[in-house]
Length: 91
Image (cartoon, rainbow, N blue to C red; front, side, top):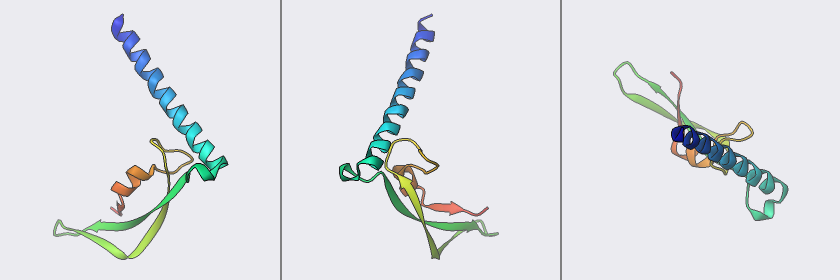
């Protein structure tokens, strides 16, 4: 019984956190003077070679739009996650 209440409380907390994060992004879109809602990250592509090594193609960087939030919104990844995973594999 108590585990069920803890689980419901945890899910409720996550939903509230996601909704608050969404409202924060919408507020920043409406009022840009409080901070940018979106940012950009330069991404690179990579592929695995037969030798087991990975080759990264630095000659054609791509600019990815990301959202300054904790969770993904509007189809964009959060900037904190996109900046850590800036190499995309083509495999």
